[in-house]
Image (cartoon, rainbow, N blue to C red):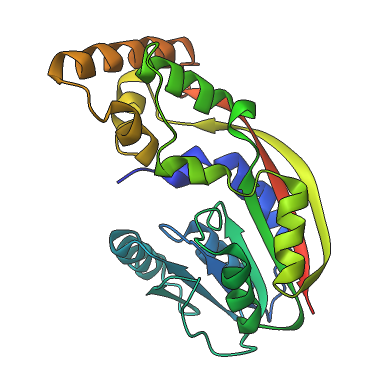
Length: 254
């Protein structure tokens, strides 16, 4: 299972600071993955609670297991699609998401559904990717695996669906949010402790599957060799790191 928590460790610090979870907060974590951000929120809200939702069953099970191991009692997880899940209205005082909102099929409807779960005046704090061409990791991995081929955008390209600030602001406004602020965030991301394990990790991602699709065994081997060379060049001795750029998006539910 891909380790998003290690990949996004620097962004996690940023999100935690921006969210500013209060002791009595009731937090909804959208696209929680293995639950690191949900557990962080629960620890910051000892007299409140945190609920993490994600569409991945294995991720949710891992999140539950880690929370049990840490002895957290004010945290829960549900396998659910935040676009359509029937949340209890006005239940939450804060919504957070660490790169968990870019794959909505209908963003306005999805954010409106999230908004119904938030109390009037509640904040929504999220991180989303800027455009693909601004991501060193995306450019480098795509070039290595494509190897000069013209590769159409696959489903993974939806990761950049909220890259346009004006589009994102319009979506949130239409969904019932106000006081929208979108600020630039630039942090390095880590794909593994060394080049070989980073290569294996990247092949688990949708982007890797998209770029390797259609190749025969020999072509796949050559693509992975090119990828290993790129990853080795980014191996700092303390992990394989790439530059990245995101937007920190904050808004308030009307």
